[in-house]
Image 1 (cartoon, rainbow, N blue to C red):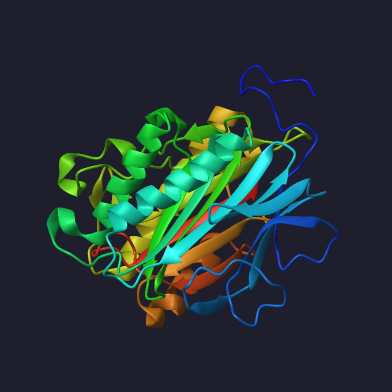
Image 2: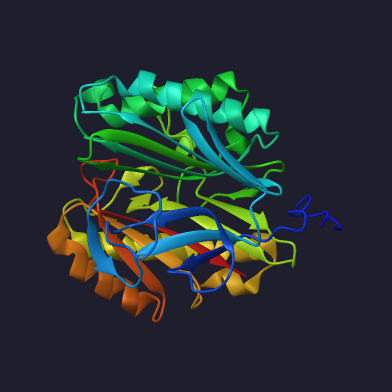
Length: 327
């Protein structure tokens, strides 16, 4: 497969397609089950399902090459891609710094052993994410442990991938990673300071993620994976306590990120969410879900959305949206 000199090598002969409640033939590199009664088995996030247009999200490939479990990490490999899953008991009293450092170290070691060391997408779920004061807040401690593990693995700031971190009440820390043999294309939002460059007021170590990561596909398309996006401009929260204003700001952030992605990747189809895009809405208060659902339906008619109840990483944020699309 020829390389595109603008973006580096593409995946070698293995397409990755993300589908809601898949009905076509294929194999799951990863499958997320949002509801316990979802039609197919999959990874659980430990977050209550609020509703939406789909109950499972399948990251699907033509075939799996191998799968297994080692050092507490479950993994599946398809060509240049590796999906890894790790979880550990966390009742809210465990030190999240040590736990995150342990989890990321195990995941990154296994990815390196499989020669798939490049970060492409990360999801992090932990209980009581907002508990604790100042630098002892559990999210800040999680960020510290994650950063120490990434640093020890030699992963530099520009190599950080799209990511999501959400809190819940299920007593487990869960980390899921998509890695590859080649890096993706990390994209930042022109309306926001890069998360990994946040000032010290947000904790001893900044959050370790890019705003989006694009993955070149064998057919020349791009798979765009967008991080959890909230009502943050620059590095500051806007519209504390105002759900509708936060949703408006999230929409502006997503449109800006889509526009930046379309321009940088020379993919005009990425300027907006098409009918195959999938959105996850993490909502702090379940009673806000109908307003979130209706807002997204007006902003991007026909796009599939799923709602999950979860705590956002800042106490003044009410909702966060992540997405995946292709173009």
